[in-house]
Amino acid sequence: MDNRSLILARALDLWSERGYDAVGVQEIVDAAGITKPTLYHYFGSKRGLLDALIEERSTGLRDALTAAGTYDHNLVMTLEAIVRGYFTYARQNAEFYRMQLGFWFAPPQSEEYAAVLAGNVGQHAAMERLFEAAALDHGNMRGRHKAYAATFLGMINTYIGLWLNGYAELDDDLVRRAVHQFQHGIYS
Amino acid sequence: MDNRSLILARALDLWSERGYDAVGVQEIVDAAGITKPTLYHYFGSKRGLLDALIEERSTGLRDALTAAGTYDHNLVMTLEAIVRGYFTYARQNAEFYRMQLGFWFAPPQSEEYAAVLAGNVGQHAAMERLFEAAALDHGNMRGRHKAYAATFLGMINTYIGLWLNGYAELDDDLVRRAVHQFQHGIYS
DNA sequence: GCCCGCCTATACCGATCGGTATACTGGCGC
DNA sequence: GCGCCAGTATACCGATCGGTATAGGCGGGC
Image 1: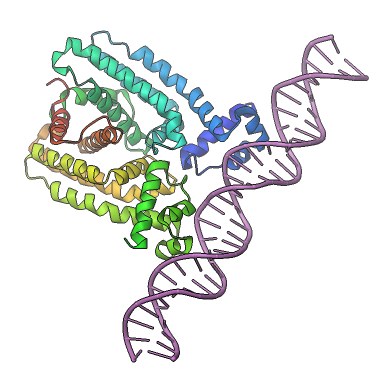
Image 2: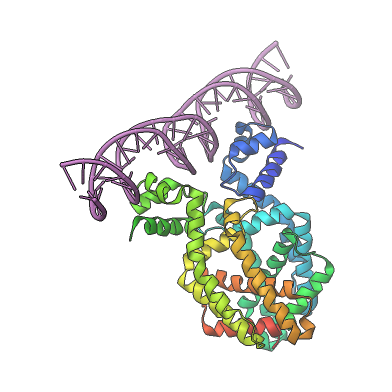
């Protein structure tokens, strides 16, 4: 592994465990077995390293979702495909997902929040488009696409959060139960 | 306002805006118009200030929820009372709720996470007890109380997060719609 | 008048923060 | 052999980090 990849990997390890501000540049380069000028050669600044990390690790999720998220008039199948896409990505990128999820809830003026803002706004927008399209088939959903997008993504992140702390398994059974509860509530 | 309260108020302002690590002790005492030894006289350490802030500001929510969260065989009313309790508290303590929500998603080894861990575990436990009791009346809910507690709290925090960013109003209408969607899904 | 204890300020501590100036290395084109 | 350039290390910068030693102000009890 070249030094650039090594820096990205160690930064992800440390930041996902203890946070962006709590881990300094010196600690990252020590963990990677290199020195500071090497890091600044590749990334220019601590913030540049953060942006590069998010950019490189986000593409996988973005690609998976554009593939799964096209509405084909079968809402159940589409929602299940999206949840499955998130779960698969989270399982394969647990540390990164934990870090990114934490940054989404970071204070609005923090660097962490700014770094993940664009990506998460994109996810919400894609989900809103999906529910808007679905409302053409299911009239009683009309006008609530914002709330549906937010609560659907909130539910996905709730389950991934449970899994990250050892309280759930992100298997295909959970995919079906999650989508079922989202559609029909808790009584059925 | 005495100096102790002044320190707590300014710390909350700054931490909710920019984060615990990003705001140093010096900046807090400057904002409060006092000096460092005064802060260390009252709180002993930066972490002590954080703990004191969370302890003092959390009691209101805890009291409101123990009042609202007793199950009386009417699940709809109980859930609505809980959501109303959260929304009312969030509206009256917007900055603190933003901070506490962010800390809940902070890295597991960070001081922020440790500081809010006990309180949030208590909230989850209370919700699980509620859904366990409700399952005695609604047999088809049995065995899913953990998932229900997690998704219910996740939904509440999703809506509060939307409100904090200007995308929702935490009024009584939203209380009813949220509980209705949680119970019956998105189609009705 | 005097002392005591709570509260506060000045001035300082070593450590760490993000970032950089400078120089050296090795490989590659010519 | 020579120049060039990406990559790396040594050593350093001023600023800020959390925290503290010391001393003085000040009100109440006696």
